[in-house]
Image (cartoon, rainbow over all chains, first blue to last red):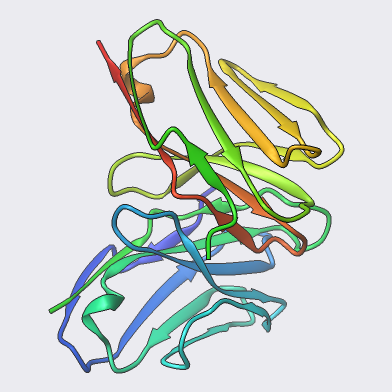
Length: 114
Length: 110
């Protein structure tokens, strides 16, 4: 079975632009989460979606938004890009959100803002 | 904010030696998960240990959890050059939202 898949793998954007990142969870997984990893640091939680509803949000500005579709895939949108948004954006999926499930990550989308 | 802190931040050993990485955290947890990350790549899940467990093994990996000290350790035995990577611990208070530490960068020299 395919793991968590993300697209695009790399992209370069200009300050002020908008970006959309996409994620497909492992088949059968209902929960998708997004993390931002700045170079040299550990990942930071952005959003969690379960059954198409937002269940958690990290300490990120309103420029960041996400949604989950009926097939459980997800999009992360970032508006008005800043240089500081340059990072590896990781998508993760899990079967459920209860009971301490293993969380699997994709390869990430590298975003460079110039 | 980061809940877990790994120690050491960097570790360099010879192939065949054991590598031990430690993780401390601040609040109560439901479980703790260890991940490996090769440079510029995604996170690979290694082990999940629940708050009521004290030790788990997977191949050459051994993870311990001491909830009274709010700490965990990852031991890699008989290390190989291919184990060179960054290792992260991540805590889950509930609901599968992970809080990561800053990671330990492991270099295994052939």
